[in-house]
Length: 150
Image (cartoon, rainbow, N blue to C red):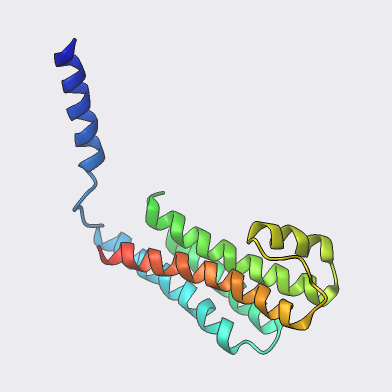
């Protein structure tokens, strides 16, 4: 019985370590770089977009580019990080639109998702909402970039 447990334990350890140190094929690296580049454009837009419409256009373009690039990627930790970053950038756009159109129900859902104190009427709080969601997206994007370099 002990031998069986040891064999199973070593087999599981081997499976866990089998992905370590493996490099992505060249086509996956290229696809991953394109996905990161699309997300970096949105990250830049968080600093430069003058209004919701401009930001939304950039997010839609990036989502299209990222989806095309992600087709050849496996569903791994890198993919989860770029997906989470894109979702956060989309959520920021939804929050911005909800604040502009005073759709507070949508805003409250996003505020709860990102642990933002509920007070959508204050202008300073509105800016903090976007900064909080964008910071979450940036964390995922940075993590994805780090994973790609490994």
